[in-house]
Amino acid sequence: MFPLPGVVLFPGAEMRLHVFELRYRTMVRDALSGERLIALATLSPGWERDYEASPAFHSLGCVARFEEVSWLPNDCYDLRVRGTLRVRFRNTAREFPYRACAVEPLADAPYTESDPLTQMARASLLEERTRLGPLGLEAWLEPPRLADDAPLATVVAALATAARLPADEKLTLLASDDVIERAQRLCEALQRLGRDAAPGAPEASRN
Image (cartoon, rainbow, N blue to C red; front, side, top):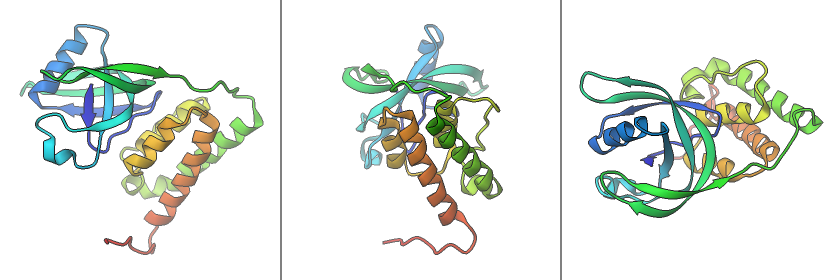
């Protein structure tokens, strides 16, 4: 498993990662010799105090498959990964050279693309993506890329992974088993993001 601060990946979305620590370079090599799978976890607040050892992490995460691997001259790696499955982390199997955990797969509730609620949720999210487009990196960690015929779950995953939303808000979305509900909550979050990032928006309190 690969625990990172502030990072939340959703099944169906892609993410680029730069791997430079020795323990995680070892993890990449081990994954490359197997099924090319790792699990991304989100570090809990206060991770800085124990980062070199075993900082706490949230119980929800996502299994990711290597889509592209670049080995760099300094023995680091650049990865492009795709989320495949929501999981809940269970017992830690080992701590060295990197952490490995048992995971419980989490399935989404079934839904149909033809359902009017699905179509409305999908249209609303695509509208928000278009509306936030001019904000560029103020709204997105990386501009989300989507096929025109992408299903709702993929639209949700791509936008939720790419949006500059707090990690705890993303984890709440990841915890939902209902894709349509997840889409509706994400749409509301993107609307707030657009208001907060828009020119002339009042500055957030620093207290």
